[in-house]
Amino acid sequence: MGQPKKQSSPRKTGLRRSHLRLTLARRVNATSPVKATTTRRETGKAAAK
Image (cartoon, rainbow, N blue to C red; front, side, top):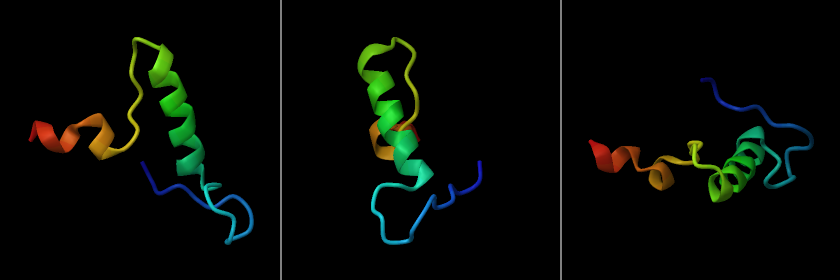
């Protein structure tokens, strides 16, 4: 997957698509039995190695 692009003005914090995706993924993980990946630290991919 490529890097997410910026959405609007460069100074707006938290509006990169990666951040928007993160908030959605965390909201899904709170309720759904199927977990979405958030960050490497949260998901635990580095600990598995």
